[in-house]
Length: 427
Ligand SMILES: Nc1ncnc2c1ncn2[C@@H]1O[C@H](COP(=O)(O)OP(=O)(O)OP(=O)(O)O)[C@@H](O)[C@H]1O
Ligand SMILES: O=C(O)[C@@H](O)C(=O)CO
Image (cartoon, rainbow, N blue to C red; front, side, top):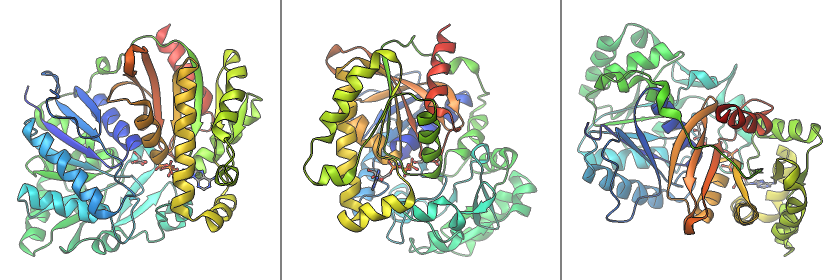
């Protein structure tokens, strides 16, 4: 089969989230870290390639440039349709990067229309009348209003995306989506004729996403969270398959590195601490004061690793994070913590960790780059949106099993249940 789908994800956890949904829907997926060097060949049997970028919070011009390079590579690999994946909580600022990247991809593809929906009902993200809900509350009332890099305070996605795009933004609302693919296609035609460039699409259930998937079969570009992925494979006659998620058996020490400060990660850290397992807290102010916090964390972990999973975390409450940001600035605090946690992850792998959970999209980007991983094989799902993956380590250091957990994904006991699942699938 030719390469059906070429995907550009704006962060690393989002990329594995998308790849996970595509794999579960039956596609054979290759996930690449960053735009590959010239000469990298896509395996002949891949149906989809997901390129993971770290472009969500960089300046818009850099995000556009990286996305266009990814697009060029995917098109030269023969991709039929392009999928731009962003966060299910639409993480962005008025300066971007969802709007500018969408428009740059539209221009490069020569298309005048695309859809936008972050809906991911399996994880409680639904869009109704253009408004995004996170669980039972509107986006602007959710924990996302405290996000350290992309605080989201407006739940109306038509206005959020409208502020980021030159082209007008419209809406395909739930009454149209409920009426099925033909009605959605007719509404798209209507919006297109009215000069609308992108439409937010309501979706409150997986059935809505399946209907939308059928309606966008002929669009050169779709933009979405990972949810829409479940609606596309049927366009190529592909059905869900349980076979796609096998990984080699895992071995080696287990660890968790958490740099997410999201509400779910805060709960997962608390649950891990409550088990009495070993955990090391990384204090950004001590890093800023020049203390070698990474070395301390590694010395602590080295002693504890033989006993089971060790957690190294910078996770803190919104108040604690605000205090750090007031002192260091949000971007500098983020970069300092990401750099330290990336060094910690490297050191953990050098000390025999081969099963690693990383929490946080930016954090995952920093860790995966520091470890020199170039591609991930997608394995079994731990919780919606988070699969175990396997990656060859550079210099023949064996296979690393790694799970990249989006900040707000996963159940409260994720930091222990992830390892239990790996044991179960090996048994
Ligand atoms: N204690 C802290 N104080 C200030 N900033 C922090 C602290 N801990 C982590 N950070 C920074 O906050 C940012 C968290 O972003 P990250 O993407 O890793 O997590 P997230 O936003 O919860 O996850 P996702 O993007 O998957 O939803 C990172 O840049 C991280 O370095
Ligand atoms: O869509 C999501 O919520 C996640 O895949 C993600 O991108 C968080 O970083």
